[in-house]
Length: 65
Image 1 (cartoon, rainbow, N blue to C red):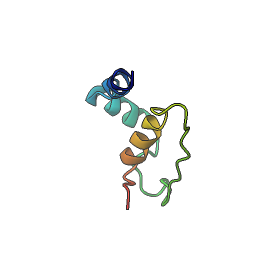
Image 2: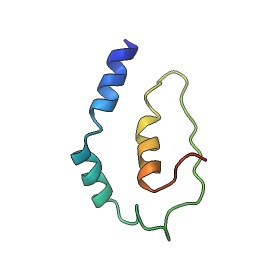
Image 3: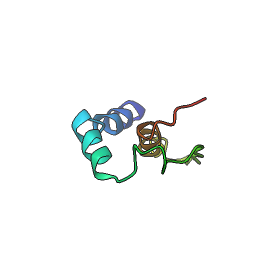
Image 4: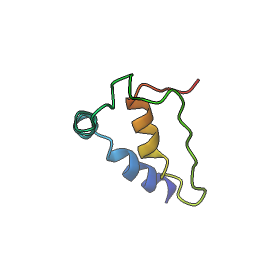
């Protein structure tokens, strides 16, 4: 089940979908409007729920430090 859930979650992250999302969100790549720090609170019972938030954070240029 875990393998299938990961395949399903990451299978949705195609380059085309990520580009469409990035281009459709105003201010996403503008450093003036992006937060300096990002806090993610993860659900313990839905282990792939963190994925969209992590991808958006990385698209904003905020990597782990």
